[in-house]
Amino acid sequence: MYISEDRISHVAHQILDKLWGSDIVDFPDESRALEAIKASLTEYFSIADEIDSVVRKKLSSYSQAKVPGSRDWEILYQKFYREEAAKRKW
Image (cartoon, rainbow, N blue to C red; front, side, top):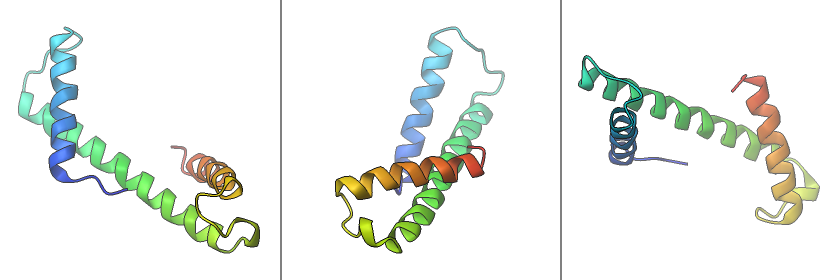
């Protein structure tokens, strides 16, 4: 799943605002905090994309799950996704 830089920035601003507005944390340097949140979100979506690619490639070799979106395909996708995420300790 591709997430645009604008969308990541929007979500990062919402996270920053929620943390600050809830008095959970005070930021000595708001711009550094925002960049750290953006970097974390970018890495998260990058890893999710990698896992998705590996799982889809694996599923393409299974004869019983040829139709993406079918019940069998979805069940195997979720199973393989969890396995791949566990391998990466993610």
